[in-house]
Image (cartoon, rainbow, N blue to C red; front, side, top):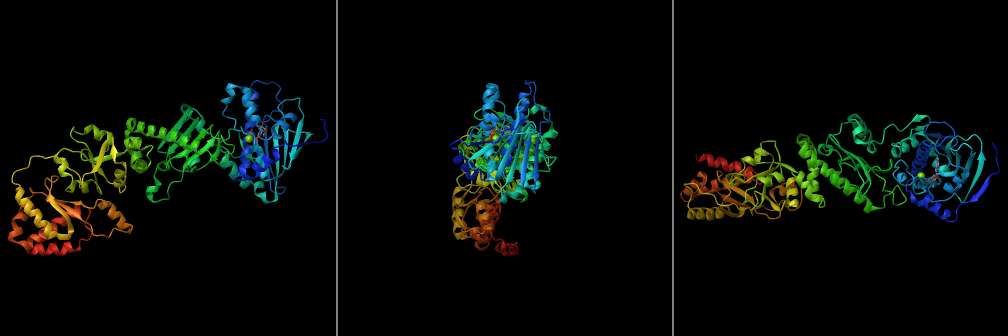
Length: 612
Ligand code: ADP
Ligand code: MG
């Protein structure tokens, strides 16, 4: 092989400046240079694979793989591929000209079909220079795939010029030797490089060996076609990607072309660990561009309520700005997030109709996130509300209904959707609030979770119908025929007036109720700003305002035997009547979850028992 004297070149005019930007500010993490060099090696192999489909006389017969070696003593990192290699002219053109991407040119040369070759990573022509963030000098040994060409070594310290010289015994492809700066010795250690390659380049299609050991073993499953992937492969991928040990509950694998080109594979884990008191989920859908990691936990990609999702989103359209590391293009990220969210919501909707049993399982664990979204994410509120499920006064125990099904059962006169919040079904059914709705055949949704009240208040309406708490002061119910033997209207008036005086401060108002059928009385929170539930929550958190005296409206049932008897004794035995009145109020407060201190009640009950 002939060897000529080294030839020295000045970098293209603007390069010094550009190099400065690349080295000092384009990437915030130095370790990125490994990702860039490995991506280039992968591109070179892909180009060779493609070229050898048609070309004859391809130089060399080495396997299509990438070998990374570290030398802790010499403080060097070497990345070698047996790819397409570069001729002398190509070395000058590709490495001497910043922002010149040979990969982009290769794609253009392939024409229409080439633009679709998603296996090529590079397109901006600056990645290579990232090596100078850590390098004293970089040597690039390269031999083109073309048999007649000699090998060369390109070298530079990144300060303004580079040299090219012919070199003997260069294998096909490219070997890059990075001689590290004194403070960058970590990149010459096996452990450090292994971590970086696993993080950013785990899904590169060609084998990557680090000091002789294969590093990447999992495929970029999201880019393969759905019908050729087995369930076990999905599960294995999920475990690898999410660092998980469980089997996923649900998965969604899809691709889209418009408005963005996307390949996504996302999973719902088997458990909602937040509900066990573990830490809040961190964003778990990683962002990739052409199999190379951009961000493992992008904060602004998906809405907060989707934080339980795991998986990968890969978009070729991503790196419209030059740095693949920090996504400055927030609008693009937003757009991407919207597409994924919309698609996932549609998927859940399909699950709910086509595999209702599976959906129920999912909802039991992750329904809370959908509620959070319905309350806080205005963009997706409508679709989220369709996915909510509640038990109701018309469903069997443990069966749930959607809001849409509730609406479909509403009678013509019913304008609102009613709900009651309570600890469980028994608590709501044994309380006094439901009976008036039952008597009128009005369905009431049962809400058992502490957040439900907040969610219902935020959501406000569904399908144009207001959501109203059945124990709210404003609820007006239609008349139903009054049974025989009720207190007359005049007597009822007398009794409510008497109750108001004898209960004094403890009640805001007393009136006859249209909600009651069997129970003697019920209490309604008279505080328009703080519901009983909110009050209890605030008390639990020791919040200001929770210790202000609470006021209730008492509603009595003129048909109830207890009330009729109270009317009889309120003049005949006023002392006893007062005790009974207090007790009726306490009972009503208990049902409303509003009784704060039961101690006085015990003493009073004994007094009442004495009179038996
Ligand atoms: P990009 O990868 O975005 O095109 P780079 O700065 O990373 O930009 O690389 C510039 C060009 O140098 C590449 O497009 C390619 O033509 C060439 N190149 C870099 N590394 C290699 C390699 N290992 N083998 C062959 N060509 C390479
Ligand atoms: Mg590159």
